[in-house]
Image 1: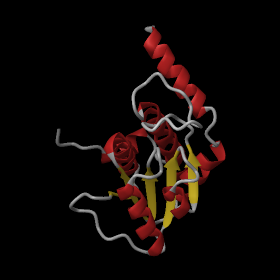
Image 2: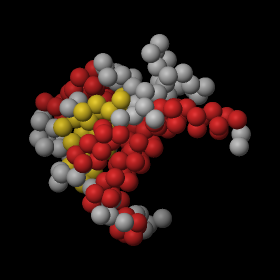
Image 3: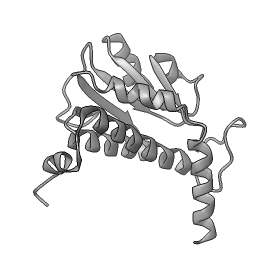
Length: 183
């Protein structure tokens, strides 16, 4: 195995070893409620959020990506999953603030529990990875920008989907039926 791959895997394992598994379970259970789920993030974090939304859709969830042209208005009782490594991405924090004002449950995934984003969340999941800002209290990384955070988010989201599927008793064949058949 290439040394860079070993380094990346070591970093991911270190971060994921520090993520609160109870928080992962709490998010998985929160998504069981019969409500609409919205996701938001910018840049690569936004791509991780979109991949999460896609997989949740495959698992039968009623899910939307904020900012898409077909996304409806958010309303009381909905859940917003907000992803920002720094916790200070303006669009993500603004959406979390508005969602909270509308009576939504906001679940934040961030490295910074003291951030603006975390202040709007009813649940903040701490992902102690390096971000593009390289704050002094962040984990060190050989990777550029927020790569470590984004990689960890992908795995955390897949873990939540795995738990969601188990709790909903959704198997591979059920998810496959929801997968795109026009490709």
